[in-house]
Length: 616
Image (tube, rainbow, N blue to C red; front, side, top):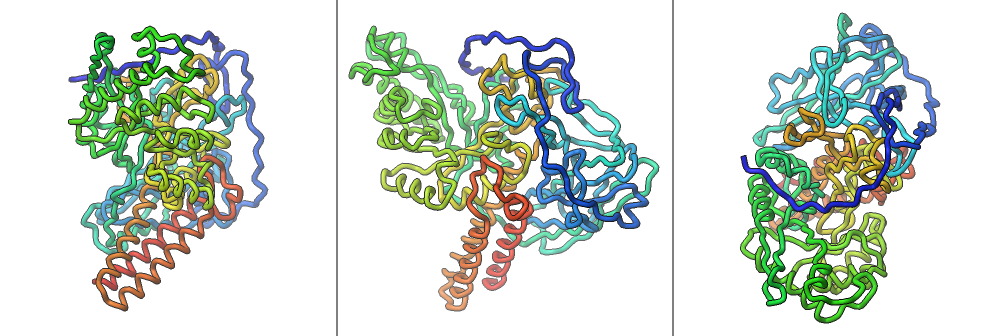
């Protein structure tokens, strides 16, 4: 089987020791953690509410069912609120859609061998249930504070559940709950593309071994809606391609298919190629685009059409060395000879990839500031060499100085997190002919972790993206382990500044830390939330298309109905306040929740049905 070989940047080793003896954090025993660090639990706000009284069936089953506003709230000690207490479940989805719903149970007594069954025998869809595994995680990149959060979505069955062990390895244990403990369940639904307009009824039952089941009526509505994907909008993902080096082509292809199934179009830091400057003095530059050519072919098989963002680091230093130029690349104005040399390399790369059926953007310095003259000059050279250019930034001063050389300025979400700033960014890009991109979904923790709730990534990839009017939204990052990927407290040797795991998903491996045994990504709340946000966007796009179609009929009644639907759609979008997806909503318990976004999607779906019925 063919394997992918990538060029890796070798960083200098940072000497750092880890405790050799086991350390217990949040009830989890770790073989080692960063030396010199004492990890303490972050303070919590408590649960100042009374639990509702259990129903008769719940008393018999020994558990109480409840639905939180966000699935990330199902911590082991979470107590139900009265308004969360539930007797029945409801879900809806459109043709070919994959979506989810969640429910948790609170044990009223000790339960052993917990199991869950979804009975939907005659429904044209597939249902898969997983448990939300809760574990301790750092509260910030370099924090010694930790908190408990559900994150991994893991299989269970026959009274056992899958749990993480170490370095990508999983194991099974008895699925037991002690009295007073809570567990959350995540149910994924996948509809057929030919599903009819119908409401199906079934049952979700949960029971402990030798206990009576708690049975919840489940109603699933299949909508006669075929979701439309926008032609000009794109979702890109930092793919962490260095993991692919020991993996087979089939393993990489399966991962790319997973990307596509979650709505992504292209890769950031895609494998690119190597530059041959051995004859640079003679004016000859060669670029081997084989890695990019191969990954583009795989992406197309997986359903990712691009664009892709690629890096080619160190070119100015190589040109400087080849030409024998003496200058400070970071602080000096580059001599014209150096500029021409970097431009020549860019031209060779553009020429060497022009026959590849995929658009790519050059990615230079990450998050440069306005005084980073190296970044500005490098982008100028690549731009002048004919390359499309991409740059992330959190200081608007960089854009002010480098806008002439940027095809795709990518704004951190905080720079476009209110209506006025988003409008200024959009209009600035329109004025300079640039493409408006932004980033801020994935696994960020500044100022609060995105891993702990569905809301940030769902909102960012969906409603927030829609509200900004941007062309592209970028997610950082898929999986970038620091030490043991299942240990959030040992990463300093790999990343002294940000030792916390940088992972939106986690790997399932058959041998510890051996990516050649990769079985695929373990989904997380954050990862599945990105798909939910993508689908939220598709519902809005589908309604927009329905409005245009109704107006195109030329019928005055249809036009009036379209105007009414558009007005309702705008009010729906405006009902969700602007919020930076990298931070926790200020009034989380009042308005901005995953449940609120679910209600928004339902309202948009109703408007689509309203217009479809009128057109038919």
